[in-house]
Length: 280
Image (cartoon, helix red, strand yellow):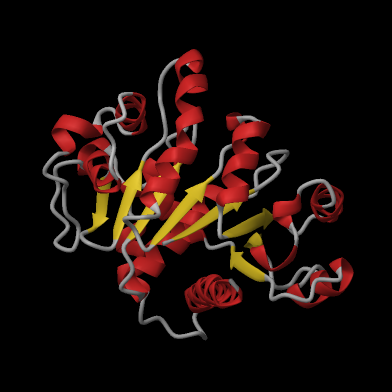
């Protein structure tokens, strides 16, 4: 139904991939949406490593499940879907055969491409079609947009997105650079965009309040604070376990603030999608 794309200008490490993983995982736990998380990466297993390691591939997590077609199709992922597109044999419901399942019926992942650059340059052209078809089958498609895709494909995906989540850091140079970039890219303006500050430090002088004032931003600004346990979980393929274990954590706990801000980010995304839908 809705396409939500996480974007950054690619000039610095913003924590975009780990943030979209946090949002997707916690959204799947909190809400009854059927979610597809799409990695558009080239030879980057950051997203995949948040959920799976070689030791955990055959482990049953209870709530976690494995796709019955995984052994056949998953080895190819986006590559397999690209072949279907080129042969004109793809339908929205086919996409699930090429995903990995995190939570049955609520969260699936289409992992990025690992292989030769020449092949990726051809496959990346099919991402807009895959994403568009996926939006007809899943409630929410969350896209981690990679800088390696090139400006034309990036623009196409941004333009087709219902909402663009702009990933920034609290560095003043990052904020100023984005203010310049925003003037050049229409999809980064207005109600269709949502600012998200990653690895957020609430004790910085660049707080949400000060950032909003500095940028002249009238819409709500979201944050995902830095959390040591979460980033360790990302390295150890334990992200689902992390959120399931801490979902009842109180706000007073350091993990409580982290979870509260992710909930607020999710609420902002859902509210913005609903508001945009009403305006159509």
